[in-house]
Length: 464
Image (tube, rainbow, N blue to C red; front, side, top):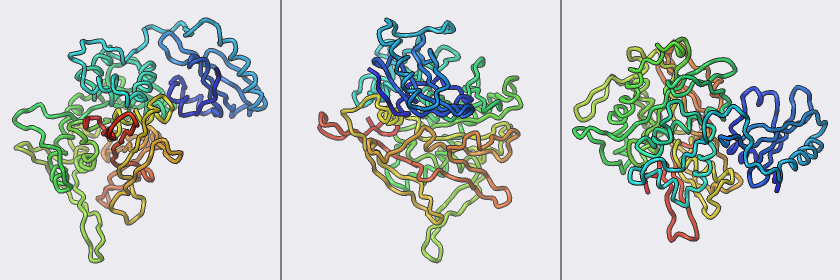
């Protein structure tokens, strides 16, 4: 059977496009055929001003790659007619995959346990066994087929004690791919070597993790805004500062392949249940050595006031603030952040692509950025993920904090679909722009007629 599908579904299954192809050809229709053995699309050739088609089959690593082409059709209808005729050649050909001769490894089957059940990470077990995460399972499985593991440990660590860190790397991979970067391989570090039409960039991933020091344990999760504000001032900057400082000590910029090129550190918070929904504001404070407070003016309006901060102290530990001013930090071009690299994100994106969870209704609720010039508070929202008005992309809620002292700055146009912030030296203030109505924090509730009560798919599933 041959079905026309959405671009979102096609994108969730295909990771073989190269950036230059997207520039010379515009995809206009997408297809899935023969129990998802074959994908296809029709493209408009921007140069020749005509239509062609591409047929893709799985290679021996299960990656969808081109196996047939059609070109020079004057109309989309004629291209579709010839495509459907060509597809018939694959209906009963006896093949499930179409090796291309350059595959050097077996498929990455990330959901098949490679260690004993007893040492599987609890969140990995939720991913592979929990019915509500069917869409995430199917999506992650497809993404990982094309993911290149430079050191050979990715799947084992994803299934055991490195679950959060490896999920963060997987998110960054699909984010960079969908942003139009081309991946380059050959070095194990930093984590990603990409280029934007010839201009190279390196990105290293790091996570904020639970404390392993019994003398300085993490506090209990805050229950009020006052408790959040107290942790934001000193505790959270230290939590962000520790992994960032550790990455600074790696001195990646001294490596021959990195020297002279922009280097970005990408950070995500996994240090306690739900922490990513309230900890993110502290990152900018630490990076730039500031503290933003809401002050009520004579008109009763709440306005932000920026104060300089020299250091942060928590439970006897003190670190200097203003990461970007620390020795060697000029070699870090920017810090990339999101609080959305979670299984719940993969689950929503998989459901939107039609990859599972049809028996569940997902209600996403939280707070969006308020674009009003005088706004101080975000906009609350709640929406059914299946609603036709619901939109979500991999670049949502991603922020880049640019280093004012960077030797090799990042060009914002390389990351055109995310939020950006800079430090204005003259005005001594933080400025930038946030994607309109971008989600600041949220959680997702799964509802099913087969479950007695709604289940919360917390943004890091740790509410389970």
